[in-house]
Image (cartoon, rainbow, N blue to C red):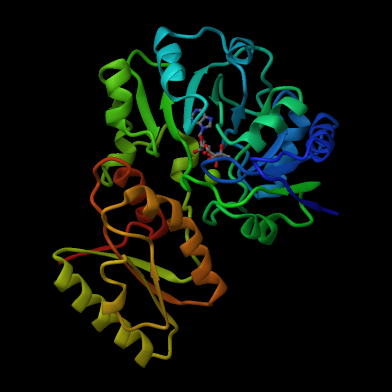
Amino acid sequence: NTEIVIIEEENIDREAITRAGKIIKAGGLVAFPTETVYGIGGDALNASSSEKIYAAKGRPSDNPLIVHITRIDALSFLVKEIPETAYKLADKFWPGPLTMIFHKSDHVPKRTTGGLETVAVRMPSNKVAGALIEAAGGYIAAPSANRSGRPSPTVAKYVIEDLDGRVDMIIDGGESVIGLESTIVDLTEEKPVILRPGYITKEMIAAVIGNVDVDRAITDEACSAAPKAPGMKYRHYAPEGSLMIVEGAAQQVEAYINERLKSGRAEGKRTGVIATDETAGHYHADSIKSVGSRSDKEQIARHLFRILREFDDENIQVIYTESFEQQGVGAAIMNRLLKAAGHRVVSL
Ligand code: TXA
Ligand code: MG
């Protein structure tokens, strides 16, 4: 049985947090809010907790978990050595939506790292997450709180939909303010490499540590190399309906999408569009959702996953989306959208 509790960031219910921490210390699972997306938390130092996380999520067990901490000395416990670049990045971006990869220490079980000798570590800024990590002893392994393959949840409603009955407790802490998973940067090679784009952009990282690469498997669709973050190879974020990205000049995109929606309706399909505030009024579909204003990429990032889920709630079978520029957080938005669409793009 899953207990569901509401905990507000600005008024933390200490009694509930203590109870949640005890569940994790005893080897149980608690789903909790972070500023990026909700996570399924278990004791990162307990191999059987990690095992339970994989089972609850229905996730292949070669896909490693991120360890969440609240203090920098917890990092020394988890990793073999901390490169200078890590201190610089932590100084600037922790607590926050950045995950760094290190060579792991012997304290971290291989069940937590999916069999790897490296470990991913993040210090979240969400205060409910922070309080829970401390109550649980300082080390929470947590993947996103979706069943494997589905869009990551940014509101508790979708955590409950995916995990009710599969975890001991779900903490409802409202909407995630960022809405996309953390940026992952690998510090185990000579040159830092971004393995997953996110809210902290390549430019922001480069401004702190100089040059940084992006894993070619992410930027280059034709690249046959496996992505270094095992999770990036799986089909992900997909809504149940078929999703197609359309790119080109705005008016052509609208005309093309409306044409395709018309055929969809003629075939008796339920149709949907991911539009923007600027264009939402221009479409004809069963469900038209604005992801935000084109001039506000942060807003688009925050709304994208929730909108993908809402189409499922409404049984939408055919979905078309506008495309977004890859600058700044746009790189992360398009990375998630391309995965959700199975890389199906029409270029006009
Ligand atoms: O924002 C986030 O990072 C959220 C919240 C809950 O913190 N967590 C999250 O976890 O997105 P998850 O498990 O859904 O994604 C973790 C990604 C996967 O793609 C995984 O393969 C990669 O991180 N990863 C974890 N440890 C790694 C390692 N040692 N080496 C390479 N990639 C790793
Ligand atoms: Mg995930």
